[in-house]
Image (cartoon, rainbow, N blue to C red; front, side, top):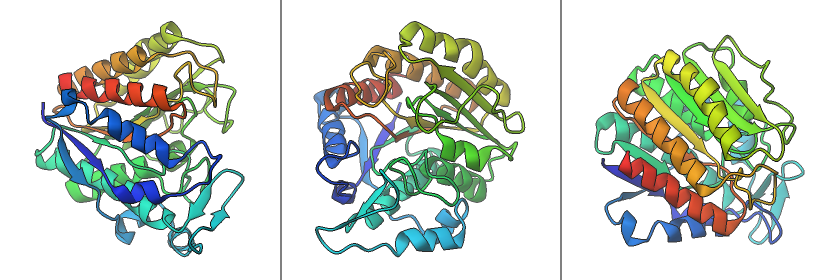
Length: 309
């Protein structure tokens, strides 16, 4: 399978401060892991800037302009909320992260790549239509899904999310639209407080909350019994993955107990479904993961599974 890696050096210039968990070293470590000879066949390209038209398919104009107008002086940072930070480099980084997601959709639809991993930051799945939160500025996965519909005419696009935190932003954007599907496994209760099993949208939302301390067996059962059958029934024409690796047992921000092999297993299952349902078209977007060793190992296992799928 032809797999592409999309990233951009500008994503390293999003400076959240010396003690912030969503720090540039996260991306550096992922990219270092993907320099291993195992990944020599990856196609590599640079993320473009998202256009306002692409952002406006998800976010209202006043929100987009509000984020783009934040312009801290060099060395300074602006806190949008308690943990969502913007620095001088954040505007471009956010546009590259969203633009990379859009480019990934074009790549799999044009056919020059079958699967794409977008290694970019800031992440996106907590950004709601009109509110930044949880380290996120723009809703990258939702922007990618809307682009797939607007440019490529797809009628059913799915986002699945295995980050340890529920993707409230993606759910907020999708929940009233039956042409979009969102499913998430996540620790519950945990930040941001959403993601109960009762949150079903218009039948297009599937949440699999996992109690703190849950490990690989519970995670795999949630996907096998609940999420994968619902995803298969939706029959997506494109599969987008919000790939957060903070459910790893070493991660400091939550209390699930997964290992890298669990992410590899799920990626393989998603690849099998994608081959059957949507010609193997998979776009994967980096979300969370805050222990650097666990993040690097897990992301490498995930990309290897995309390549082997």
